[in-house]
Image 1 (cartoon, rainbow, N blue to C red):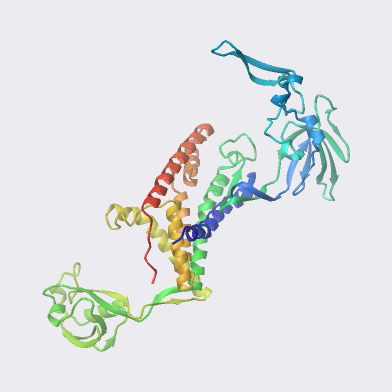
Image 2: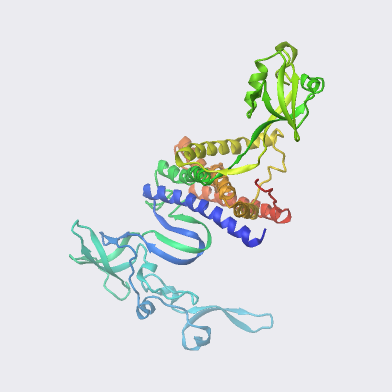
Length: 506
């Protein structure tokens, strides 16, 4: 498997799953009136801003609606008037500066911390000096915030809503900023500035992200931390729940696209207990049971039912051994002659085998839907009880190996190759469904930095009747994030040093 295949497999599987997780957070944050600053496709750095939704701004007590994708161009001349930059070092001979003088070991003196002399008394629109590396702003809305002084023109819609038309920054040191209001314009100080949500495209094509206002800071009224507990909980739960719902959809699609079904099912003998009626009759491991008392058997329960119906009576078993067809006679023991907890009346273990291999079987939607739902429930059950089975030794440790991004890409690449080989979507869709469940359940774990950890803090808040100090909560989540990143590094090293190799599906 090539690196390119692994990368493509990872992006095809994890990209949509992470995106749907973040979309759940985004949707319920919006429903809970929590301000979403940005919803990004992929991870930064940013490539492009698709659009910015409608926002609002209050000027001198007058509320204005900011239209979608609103821009207010700021000319270079105006930007230079309102924003100052420190002079370049090669032109300091013509600029008054302030500097700290330090004496060198050789006795010479050197100037440090050079800056324009008036930087501490600048009154230019409250912005002060910009670093030389920072470009001058080209749009008024890029530097807008509460406390600025502006002059705005608006139009009134038929429903009475005031729609922002133009807006201009005012310099409180040089211009009239006294509040004024007319039927088409307003001047004064900005309050309650809420820009619309930015929808962006970013360079790293793995899912997306939801950036909400004040996730641990309740000071802003429309921040995440200031929202009611029910909406904070809903916004946190939505991500994992969307992943579980996505798993159902993926598994339904998998059954509709085609899943491998065994062909020519036959009951096969797994083992024969010494001294049992089966051994006396000449039955051997790997024998296929074609019939019992002339009744064709393709399921294990058929063999079991007929055998138990004839305890103490001789039965005839039609057996295929290699290319030979045999009729063997055996007498199942009566109920008082064997322990049903450890063995059966014949003294054999049985299973099913596909004598004609496997073939893809597609199902219509009305059949695929319940199968997909049941597959999801079964997978959730396996994930939930897996730790117990590992502790009890039922699942070997080498099969319970955790994986990181590199391991997931190795598995995804392998399943992508399997899908190409089989000319079917089963391998890659099965993996996507399982990973969607794993992503949802993992995020519900009550660990710092995960959705479950944040939900735990809300639960503590419910029990205590007051919330944990936001600063302390932030520290806990930062520590948790550091530990998770450390674990990610360890798993990545493991995946690189000991790559995962999966067997072919069928």
